[in-house]
Image 1 (spheres, rainbow, N blue to C red):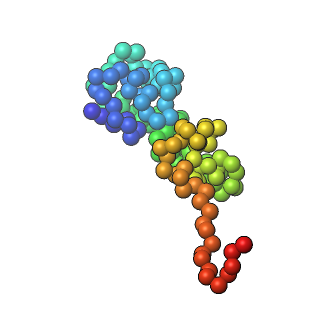
Image 2 (cartoon, rainbow, N blue to C red):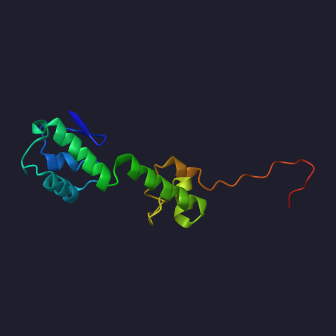
Length: 131
């Protein structure tokens, strides 16, 4: 078991399949990386040399946004939506579905749905008469 750009890869998998499991690398980019390194199409991870693995990590790190950089970018986008208080930001803030999902039925198991827009009751004051 080896690690390539922070992702675990099984030794018996082909290079294109193992590298497509890295966050931010899909099948097309995996084939491009393999082609640029001059690796055969059916070679497995366990047959790679240490130099080839290092070269692959270096190439992926230079050309592609992967793993923690990708997650950091996604989190920054969500924080921006929350800070400008747009609809999607509010839904993210309260943990509600935000793509038009029906929250009365489909998000029923979501605990955030129950406490999303709770309005507090005013405190009881005995000397004030209620209408």
